[in-house]
Length: 497
Ligand code: GLN
Image 1 (spheres, rainbow, N blue to C red):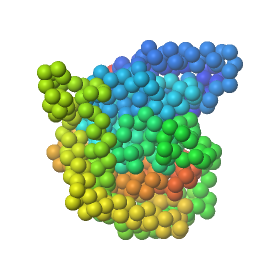
Image 2 (image 1 turned 60 degrees about the horizontal axis):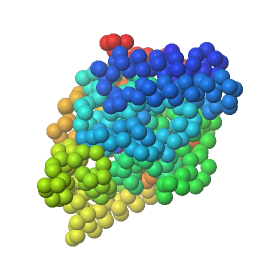
Image 3 (image 1 turned 180 degrees about the vertical axis):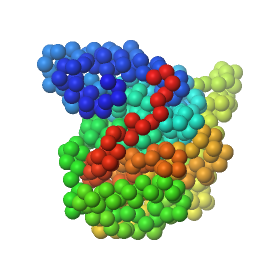
Image 4 (image 1 turned 135 degrees about the vertical axis):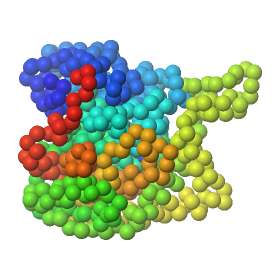
């Protein structure tokens, strides 16, 4: 039962072939069996999940009209608040903090009766590409436990790939939904900025952060997308417009006559050969499904990474100032005997990890008087140029595509001491965040040289998210008929399962 997709589970619930309590219990068993090896979860809320499941079953028994994913379990990235449930953001500084309110994403999940199993592991405050920056130890990739599951939302994607949950929520500031999806053989979507509320999403870089759906199929991602998206007056950047019809698009998958733009700058020599092979093969399949493949160029994407690593740290240095030892979580030192400043210093020294400190220092420098224009100001100008590149390219195509990441999953520890090598993972995902548009990653197969999953990225103009689902569904269907079974059925079995 746990190997089905979320929509198949939902259909069984509707048909009365299973209950949400049974489904939830089966996933909790699976978590107990494999999470010692995978470490996808930071907190499992067995009691809360089973209570929520029992409540959905009761509603169904009464004949209440329920939403499409009602009763299906989900794993939640630990950067979103859930009332009364520990929320750490993968950091020691939030130790012991239980938020007094639900994020809007969680409120929407609850409103749709989606059962929340627990909180998933992540790089501290979502800063990283491997989940190795979690203060609670790394998550392991279910395809090969010695490898990273991507980051920052490695816990959410690993949970899907290890069949610990059929649905998950991630957040994506520079690729943290799409890159983990790519390296775990799962689907991840970063919606248009403003499409999903950021209320209760602990801020890393507010102008880039966006929550989105993670799943094992494009249709499941679409169903979850519609459940969490929509206008929210509690988020000043929320878009007051109808949610794009992503479920209808995922069900249609008709790409006849669509123009698919291959980004010249995101497909070059720096990409692993098996990544390029699978990318080219996917393009052929899309052409076979009736799409027209065109070449587009985005010359300013070259500067996206450098600009991102000024903008994101700048915003982080401001956002993380709230962790001052007074309001949330950890407090080191004697508040009565010492100055507030020394308590703050001791707490931040002990509570923040190396990468978070690096970014706070970098961002503070980039925003400092005398350097602001040269660093932060220039980076903002690059951001405008990237948006213009997208606009020009979208005048010639309906979606743009590229490999999601330059390589497949690397070994745990391989890049920990080389921040630049780590940052380069995001070279193809960052432009989307800079322009505030939508991006999806779905599995394109295994790289022949290492047998590890490769991701295919689809980018669509703002509030045209349905186009990613059209193309994603078409490619997924073509690949499925080629493989004969979903990619994850080829993943090695985990011990304890
Ligand atoms: N890997 C990128 C970073 O370290 C993106 C992270 C994210 O999307 N949250 O900032």
